[in-house]
Image 1 (spheres, rainbow, N blue to C red):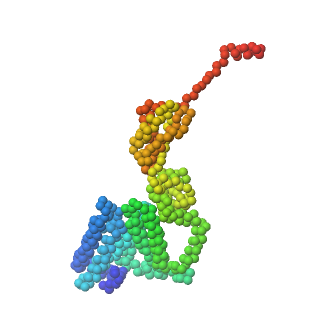
Image 2: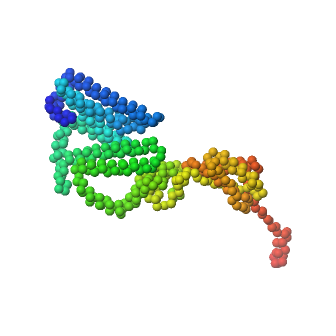
Image 3: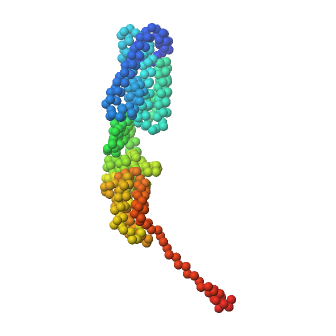
Length: 451
């Protein structure tokens, strides 16, 4: 049997593969199977204990697994922590087997499988945490799964070294460097691993910043976006370095990108800068009721490039952040969420306003959404052609609930009060005068003309 090297067994040659098949039929396989089962049970017990500990430390009513993490997932064994612990315990058991005189057979197959499972779980969980609404996550998960299991099969059967040697022979020249297909594939894998780790860290930080946030959510959102952008940038640099790309060449690329931003991408760059300014100044916050370019609604999300505003009728407007910086924006809840709303009514001339106006105030106060302080007010607005114009003003504290519905409730209360008091609401009246023609006039005119 070949000498063991590295953390896992080396790829098996055809002769070693036949010897492995013979070793799997020996009674010592039962010892390996029992030890492997013990490793899996111990890993399961550790993960379950940690999960229960975190659940007990969580806020009451909000269990830790309500939002599945990368390490734990929704269940005990579907996170990244279980296959990683199982792999580490299996590596320790593999070191112990030669000491007690048990030949390796099962563990030569299990270690690559556990490593592949850990890679699949890590990729899938990180992608779901970083991009929870993306339709490409499922496709990426399946692709990584197929590649990982194919790699395990090639490793165990001993075909992987042969394929890698053939890839070494496929080379081409890039500038002054000679690059092989194997170098590109290994560099791409290293880049993917670095980017996945960067996404994992950024998703964990973002979840920590935004979970349970009720105040300063805009600042938290800005910090989460900035952290993700910084980690992805650093991860990209490490990935390029791992792929064998000279980072000094990025100086020229950075200059070209700067020129491109200065000319063709200035609007895009302006929107990104405006987004961070909005989040930092807190002039607009998630939940504010605003009017932008005639569109009224509530801010539901502030991205680094645009802001989403949802109207009360369900329509959503995607507004570039630059517009929110350069144009006048009406914010109904910047310093105070209380908003004044008014409606009008006309009563007939001769109405006793000194008696009516206090009753109207009491009727409007009884409407549920109308604030008692500052209370409603009734004013004589003017003298109309048909009656006295009254203006009824009142305040609400929830503009996101709409103004048309509360104005309708107030109008109904006013109408009920007027009917109760017997006050007439005048309507336009016009006096028409019909000037008749004396009988026989047309005949006399015709006779005088000789017709």
